[in-house]
Length: 491
Ligand code: NAP
Ligand code: MG
Image 1 (cartoon, rainbow, N blue to C red):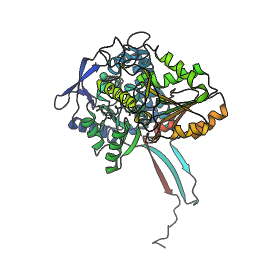
Image 2: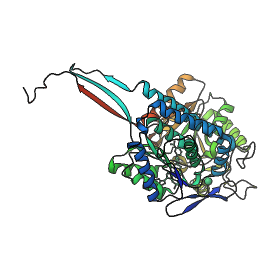
Image 3: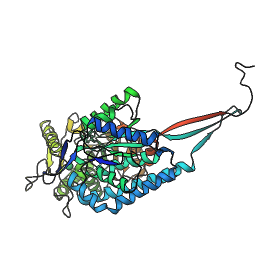
Image 4: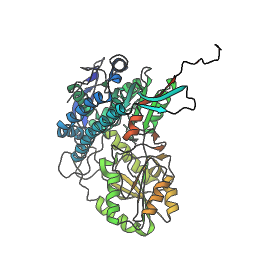
């Protein structure tokens, strides 16, 4: 396990020697200590990224040359897949198969953007037809510059990949800050980048607190773009900080995503996707479908099946075989989710199952998967993100009512609909005010498809070609192509 900052191609302690603890959420044990970056360390990292961008030529390499590094990073991740997945489990708490899948997906993300980097060479210039034959014009894409990437703790390595891979593909250089509670795998990513010979300063990793290291990144004058995934309140701070010097931003924030199940849906299929949609990754998923709307005719049977199956979910240490639900990521997160359940009860909600620490789990940040009914429409439980294994479920009668309830939210990240009637499913999908819509499923995510939210769920799109555009500026180059006089001054 790495314990130092990775700045300008070198490992170093923080400037004041301070560290923070790494806690395994399954055991509550301190398993490691990592350097806590200061504003001074962040300044060194930004300056190294600046040099790599302005002087050392990372953006001047061809896309194909950058692609070689990205592919080597992908291979480096795969070569250590099980080991890195294990680090993710002891740091984040998620079940090993989910961590293993995340790590494979992170490698795939580097491969995907290697392909897009190569395409930048094939089609670098877009000719523009002008109405005046004396001029020619073209549009070219260029990297934005130095990127400050700040990521959350729910998919530590994968969120790093979603930002670092397209940024490097575009020709940007990066200062990455992982969340304090899950910093181990971001440091492994730096180690892999170092092993494959990524030039110094192209990727820097500064671990430490959001209020110190994160704040220093967003306030830094020499950072051109901020790429953030996390909570709405910190997203607002980032937007405000970016306003001062017009930094580019992309924000991936939270959600309270609806899942609409019609009477014609198969109950077993619906229950499987509802459970996956809220209980995978312990419900700590920005796109989790945490508000379930079930048409009246199906409601009673569906609810009883959902409760019956939810009670069978195997809880435990993510390293044990067959575990589907690990501990929440931290003590703080556990307290917040428990408080949200208590507030829901106080507001009149009924706990159909779960809602407390499971029996036999005195240590570890464990929580039973929880189904809430009778949740008032105006309560926080219905409106605010809980970010834990807690689903609220209620009925609707008509398609119009379902759409109205689904869209009645300040968020708009994701939405899902289940129906055997394809035309109805397409109608509802079109009516959802959300950036990600699933039909007859919830959560499957592909590197090729755009990811991001409407409304307060964010700005910009990650993944796919949209993810690359996040890190590119567009420049027009217009040429006066004849030797004729212009005739404004010299007649
Ligand atoms: P968070 O508190 O917003 O933290 C996200 C990151 O921002 C962390 O690295 C954090 O550092 C850092 N940070 C905190 N204060 C900062 C500041 N003043 N300046 C700069 N950086 C600062 O969110 P979280 O609790 O880690 O993650 C949960 C939230 O993320 C949920 O609301 C969820 O919906 C959202 N999320 C969204 C997506 C998506 O794709 N839309 C994906 C995952 C998560 P420290 O934590 O180290 O202090
Ligand atoms: Mg941890």
